[in-house]
Length: 563
Image (cartoon, rainbow, N blue to C red; front, top):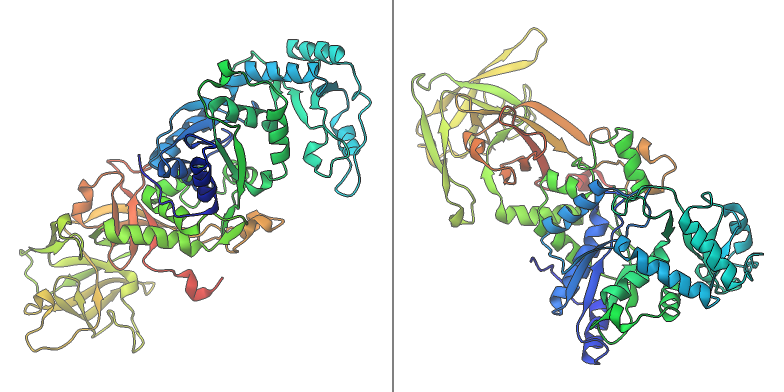
């Protein structure tokens, strides 16, 4: 199992202390997503924290699906989440589901009713909001609050039997309607839902609420440290209340530690130029603003994987942003630098021309060709070498030529000389244009004594451009992805759709690649020299059509334009 970089932070200090003081014999954590969407980068922080903390301290971590909302959950989401956690490099101790505990949860609910700590209520949702009060005003008791335990038990059993309509009754904890913590004002424990559950089928028509389910699931699994983000801070008191008021017998708990689980909150990290709300992500997907959950412009884990991000880069990113007690906003450059650092060291080099312009070397023999042996990585000899074919006709980038270049344009123009990287120096002698004035071909001459970076007369050539042999080029479509939004905080906007970057995707349908790329594997990543880092599109590429995605540019282009 991959071990996430896990620097010291306050949760690690608490956990280490608990081990040292004998409160726990081991550390047992869990990552508990709801299967109602695909995981995104925010989830990766929690994954790395939970799995990384357990691994770092010699403990274990479960993957548990908190599946208590049947209308929104699906097998597709569950499988995608499981695959993403595995792709990040983590192995869970147990694969668990809250739905596996439904019988236990129902029994605990009956126990609370019998103790007079829960009651069946017939207030509707609007009335319940009205009775709840506010931060400055205490709530009011429901007329059903003093219902006898026997009557509540009878109604609850009939709720389970399907005798009532949705919304007609709920089961509520009986705590304190005057509590300054609104979470403690008689929260709902169960509600009626006539919905098919992707695992439990139609066995249940009542479903437990998250706050009731989560803490009990933690206890049943022997979790020692229940880590969650700050929005659950007010729920910690409720978490502890439920565990204090149910009977967790030894036959349920087994040999699972010396103490009940402890909830600890940490700050959420919000990444600029992204949205993390599942509701907004679903809107983007369903309305066709992006091409599915794995669109490479999204920071879903499947999208990042398709774009070419590596598991190591995401784990390193999570380590870099750290674990704090406050929410934070992270510059997109931090994420992009994490993948650049990874690919700078691990990606083989190659030539790719996105927007090709043909260059004909008129004094190179028509029946001649040759190859240049070049390193696959300038600093890593273990990556070996490859042969790049060269001939009379090559493709260069349209952007590497200008009809009327300024003085500091060190690329090709009429009468100007540049070096073809690893090859010869060429001079532009003639420019061929079509009827619309577009440059369609360059005719150049080469210096046959200028190979290997040298010239016979010692002249220095400032411009060096990449190229691909026309006779050996591999045809490809290249997709250049950029940030999805034009503003750093789109989630705060009233209309976040209007902030979508119109240039977030540029497609180059006629790109030309060096022939070595035809033999590469789907997960291989490359640096196209002078262009950026690229990978095969693992969804759309086929033997008939090669598609490459840009993972990230060679440097932060947004730093130039500001934020």
